[in-house]
Amino acid sequence: MSSKFTKEMVDDYADKLLIGLTEEENASVLAEFEIIDETINTINKIQDIEKVEPMTHCLDDFEYELREDEPEESCALEDILKNCDVTNGREIEVPKVVGE
Amino acid sequence: MKYMNKSIEELHEMLVKKEVTSAELIKESLEMSHKIQDECNAFVTILDDAQPVEVTDNLLSGIPCGLKDNYSTKDILSTGSSNTLKDYVPFFDATAVSKLKAAGAVFVNKTVMDEFGMGGTGTTGHTGTVLNPWDKTRMTAGSSAGSAAAVAAGVYPYATGSDTGDSIRKPAAYCGIVGYKPTYGMISRYGLFPFASSLDHLGVMTRNVKDAAIVVDAMKGIDKNDMTSWDSSHIHLRESLDGKVKGKKLCYVKEIVDLSNYENPSAELKEHIANFMKTVELCKSLGIEVEEVSVDKTLLNASPAVYVVISCAEATSNMSNLTGIIFGPRGQGDNYIEMMKDHRTKGFSPLIKRRFVIGSYVLQSQNQERYFRNAQRVRRLLVDAWKDLFKKYDGVILPVGSGPAKHLDGSKDILDKDTAVLEEHLQIGNFGGFPSITIPNGFISNLPVGVNITGNCYDDANVLNIAYALEEAMDYKNQIAKEV
Image 1 (cartoon, rainbow over the protein chains, first blue to last red):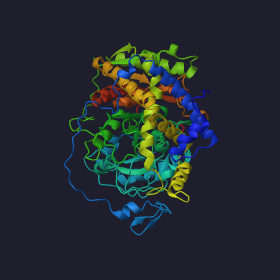
Image 2: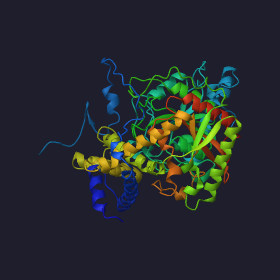
Image 3: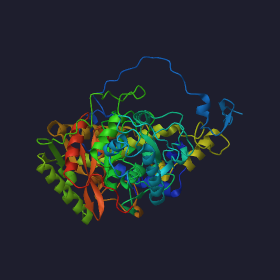
Image 4: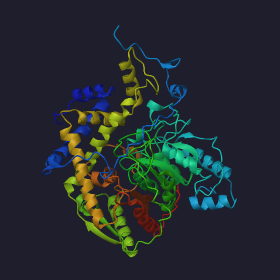
């Protein structure tokens, strides 16, 4: 196992995503990192790769058309709140966010 | 089974002639749904209260179908097969769902998928593994696992799917049916749970090519709610199927098909490639010119990693709204950070967590150039290589996967260096947004295998017509899984 990727590093990235990992899950991430990194090494050897424009979208010939800015009816609040576990009247309830 | 093994056109004719009613079709489809649920675990929800609709001129009217569970359905549970949305009931329909409803389609179930579409085995849904109706010790592949199993088993003539890497086209092969994803943006993505927005396609799984054309004709169209959708009103897929393919040109890629590229190829792989070459000869007998071409092997070998890097990066961003605060089960904790972490840690499967961590890593500013930007650069090189082929050829024809459905006990869904190119090449169809269709082309170890044809963007009618002609020349059209 290369020392480039460590268990601590994986845990750190998972924590940034607000995700906890088991030992097994952590090991699985490490294993896949190794394979990806090996392939990326190959990619970096492609001549003049840095000169290629990154492709961010399937359809390069696509012309975006902005639609008119017309007001539409909003969704009913009670419909939206139906999927929330903890509500208080017309509001979503959360623990205190600002300082004590 | 009296009706649900039939094609859409056959059922429509029976409905119009009043030889059967929409209610009778729904009844049989629901009975089949419960049977296949018991045997294959294909559904998140079975809609036992599905109501018949009026039969109109529309071919889909009154006919039952299934929806993958990442299609938002108003007032119907839509989980994406994730515990993070296990009770989520949308308050709106996806555009594709609205269009199917307007056509008179009757939804009888929501199908199990790999969690949020981020898997290729059919084993990561929160309601458990989907079993292949041809052999229940085998996987269906994924992520459109339940849709594939249900169509193959004869629950209805079609079910919707979504495809970010090969999630329609590979399960179609493993289940012996047709899987078609049209050009990117032909069907609106509005209301489809996003996985990787630049790669996500909607599509359909059927038992014959004409049914796929009929369903996508109904689902497609420009949509003000998806700015990447485009006007396809000039494209009439079903009407363009005439089976005339003499003079068409296809190619296959030597570096993917030639056995010498694989160390110690298995007997099934050898048979799969030999069967593919038989299909190539069949194409030639139909008057299609088929040639072998070469593509830079370094690029091809990079494709699976390119897919993982781009899709994981986009998914990490897309799914940051899954916090359990506004929707989804509320997590435990003394503050909102702890609550979100508890929700996400308990809610996501190990596979999803792994993909999120990879996505986060490649998006870090110090890593972006090496991983994310370079992956996007190779994406362009691969798409350019395929577009070069499309200057000369109507399509690329290739085998799907390295053989028939894999055993469930061997499922792992992690990059495998040895057969990665063969297993993953359909992702190039997502990189370029190309229309791409898988049809069954034979049996290996008594299990179905598939062949794929991929063409240039907007050339869907041509791609489907070639598949239509090829399907007619083989014996696998409208087949129903035999173990069921």
